[in-house]
Image (cartoon, rainbow, N blue to C red):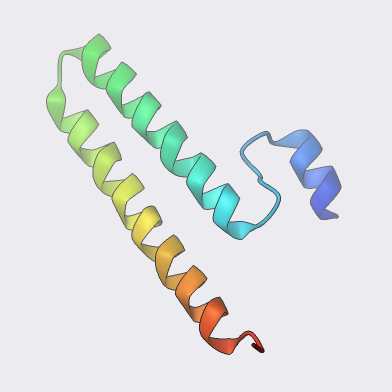
Length: 72
């Protein structure tokens, strides 16, 4: 499946991997907040925020790695 096809089927897929990870983080934040509120369980929000934070961390590491290997 091409990137364009995947992006057409899934709005979370961004223009590049960094943008896709960012979209996932935003989705997790919103989903966690909604679920935590609906179920009156703050641990759901904590869990999804932790997942989003891990994705953000890895996204930054990937971006730094790409910058280090890119020709200047």
